[in-house]
Image 1 (cartoon, one colour):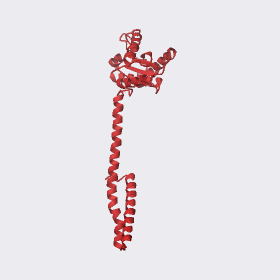
Image 2: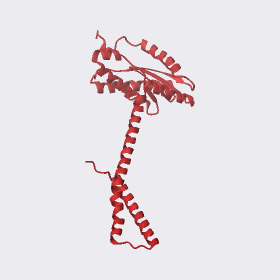
Image 3: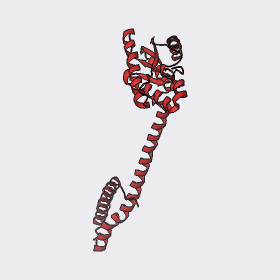
Image 4: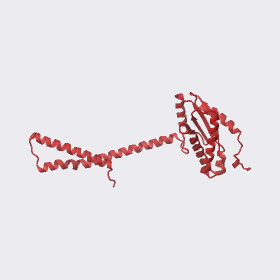
Length: 247
């Protein structure tokens, strides 16, 4: 059996006392106006009846109100969770592609300039093939954690593919971007080693960036940044050193 909450008890007590005072006052006033005298039974009924009727009814009503309020709050929480899931990547918790595009469009519509960044985990397929997809997931999580730490809370960051991320941040010059790229890769490597236990594997990301002027579309920025990313990737070894079959 579930007992009424303190909220229900307080509301019931207040409501019943108010009802008792009102009914007693009205009854007393009415009898005084007509000149009738109240006997002991009438007085007892006048005092007891509001409590006998009011307490169970108030308990029922306020318990129901509390249940409805609890159900409404649970519904709001579930809706918020569903909205969050619809906006985020289930593995990393970053924005998903659709949510990133919507927020990027909003930033462009109000004239926010910045830097569009595209990042790709190096050799993720080979990691999956060699160590399994659970280790590959750790690589994705390590990369996302590194991007969040280095780019900061003000950046829009999304996972837009299996091994691909994009971000929109405040304007970064070339020198600062080189430093940012090194920091991201250092964080990615350390985080992956900690998560996977592969202490000798230097996980890295290929990262490119383009200045983004207000009015540029996501598709335009993706094409331009991806072109640079492809050029950087062409200069990589065919195999990651630690995974090279000949090693």
